[in-house]
Image 1 (cartoon, rainbow, N blue to C red):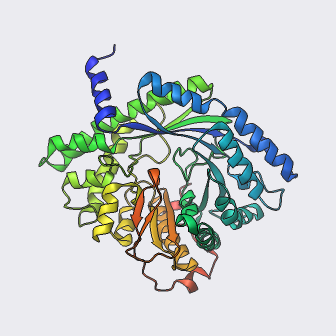
Image 2: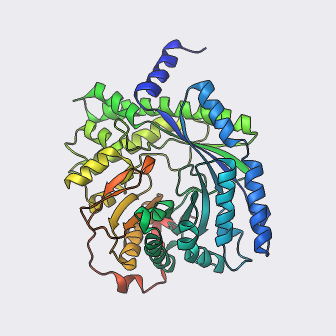
Image 3: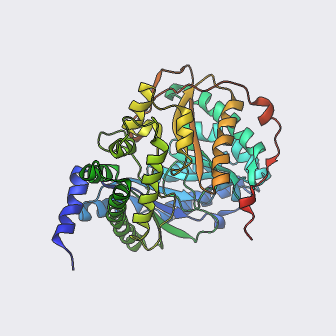
Length: 450
């Protein structure tokens, strides 16, 4: 039986505390599209995506109207393109086919222009990574990912070096938009196969033909709940976060199940990550400050974030039949008003952000850095973040945006959900000799689990 108090509570979360379903992402397998003819492969990709996702946007909009839950983005993820493009010399035309399919279906983004290169690169993996500057600078809605490391395999430093060079070139190619092309690329360690969030989403090879994955978000809801326990012990704070995360995730479960039913596709997972936006009242940084920090980035930030991340997972996991994706708390610098202000004041540095990624979901996300930073330094930052993921057996990602013509202390505007950010200073001590060694950093002992 429906409790009227629960209905009113949910309505309050939506109307006043910015609760939403951040994304419905339809995962689509492209394994049946393989061909050694580039034109035929691209046509198969376009046809498969447009056929499978033709009703996705309409279904999302109907659920919004009928249930009153805002669904911010409708998205598609596909099989990593490097897995289907091995028989053609250049995968770039597949990116164009994906972009056209995204426009035809009306989705905001399509993810899966991706390679899984954690233990070594195939010819197709290398070709895809090298094509990233062309593919992402010439498409609007295509997002890309490269998995360069895992706890079981270690870190493929050759792939790390290639990614650094690709990001540097992509920044130059998209200089007119502040290097925005780089915002569509995530370099992962321990990438998951069912992530509904862009830019890193792809439909993993272990998935079925279709899957409906939903990401929910409610930083404002958590912030408001914690206002009621000011001055109370940390275990009470954790308990309040757990209860709140449960309620938020139940909304996501409802949206996911209904979307799966209407799309006649299997329900995949609910990702219960707290994903912020640049809007006031929708900030993870403000939650950390409500816990007791003067400003996010100061001493105690890592511990407070660890408390938040753990409590969100514990509360949300009981609220859905399948929890997956990344699930926790995101700290994308340009997309969180509290993070933006903390970085602008000097309280939040790239080194402190890196420390905080040890205990949160994903990693260095939407961090704008000076355009003059070298490709080797970009690769070194990627390697550092990958090492955190590998050693701690968690997913970490790096989404760096070198902004051409900008220096530390300048600002860049991305607009919309991507927000704006101050350019953070990067220590330019060279790591070129380290990166140019190549090879593979071996897996840690914790990776031996058989």
